Image 1 (cartoon, rainbow, N blue to C red):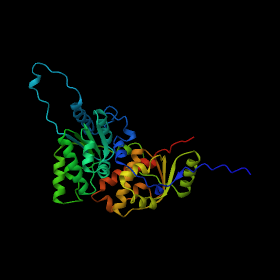
Image 2 (image 1 turned 135 degrees about the horizontal axis):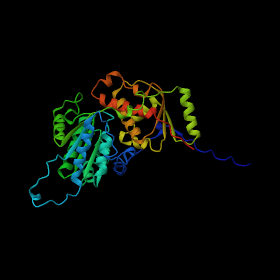
Image 3 (image 1 turned 135 degrees about the vertical axis):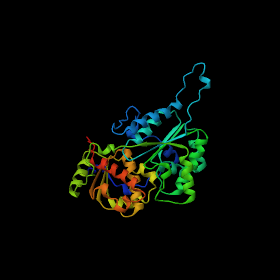
Image 4 (image 1 turned 90 degrees about the vertical axis):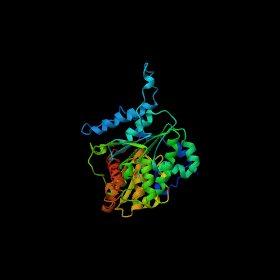
Length: 352
């Protein structure tokens, strides 16, 4: 009897079945700009001519980067000239989708090494993985630390990061950060502890604040709504992608939300490693803020990895309830909505 040929393994997986681990070394290796900003530069940034602050930000960041370039020898009187005073940090404040991350990545590319680029969550996760003293040693000597989306979920993390940045700045490291909220307003509507407010003021004193106005570039050329498909259509799309060799995951929305509560947000990047398309079934309105914030962190990693999403049920950009969208985290939810629109309206990848 001829033995039956082994079946080719299915390429349809479930995120809820993955429980990744991540080491401090792996976190450090990921402290670079996301793939879509691998070649970001000030020249490739496309400012909206209707918002002069965008071009002004490019000019100011270019000047900030001049500190790393060798200075030309001056003339006879050059020894009497003093370089203009410059704060060790620069902070890009603006709405979602105005190109802050592109500009932050462009600054990172213009700086000499060693240098690091990561989200607020990644830096706090690094401290958690290595311990505070070891994290300081790892980052010490960096010419530039870039922190994307400096948004606060608890005062403890903020005080930790403020202390960390204070030590690095004192040793000569320069810092650049982005957020949807100016430094003096971080935590506004969320926390009122005196120690927390003191830490916020101490951190903001190190930053020059650049305000960047504009419209969300992700919605300039696409309909401003995320797309949901009917269940049978989702099944057909998933089956076709799997048949063509795509690495697809399919999860019930509720199962994914529950699973995210068991995985630290710093591990979300490994949760989606190798995935080409994410399918979610039966999306619904979220009413628990903790669940919603985990989803925001997850969508951030999916967006950075440029993985399209196909979903049934409630359109993804509508899963945050009205109370969330009016509360202290509203800008985080609005940014996530913008990213959900982009992720669900794009083309699915072709496969042989």
